[in-house]
Image (cartoon, rainbow, N blue to C red):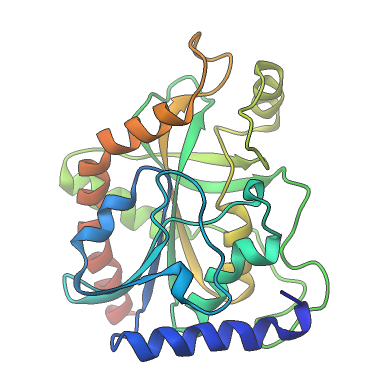
Length: 282
């Protein structure tokens, strides 16, 4: 994928999706490891494998089905990415963030990004859902590097509110109505795929990180360049290295994701219509 044709490629992918699905989504949702079951809640659904969409990268990680599901959730038009791709799979930053470019071309104005994360802060526990208040990009990569096509947005743009404060407040209030609470935390992104060492986790803690993972941050950078409002939610699927004595594994990540799927689905099912109601009242 070359910078000079990125906009055209995203346009071609969006045109293909429009031809397959008659619903124009307003809210995009990216589902992280072990959280893909939420997509089954979408009604009037059209499921398109990533492999069918022009220029779309293919997920190679267990727990990422690799489908784009277009439909409605309680009447609200949504586009749900059932999985994502990661830099550690060998993809460039442009490829990792290409689906977000396409969602923007489809008309998505609000993006919910979710992920599986390791908990660093000691008051967190496995199974917690945490709202992202900010992030630290520790990957050494930025998807905006290189030629900038102004049709996507400006080269230089503000990231001081990468994660919408009012969407976090709405999510917290929605969770309270559903009978549970959501903490907030700062997410630090590494390249992976190896899990972090205990020394790295101590360093990340000193830097102000509460959670650590291998996704999300580059997607959010691209979304904000395009003017898309972002809400981030992490599922604490394991405690980070050195916080717990047991060795870390992807199987543990997947198992915890499946265990909290009911609460996660409950939250998003209530939150999406609340977001749409707020939009209509604005």
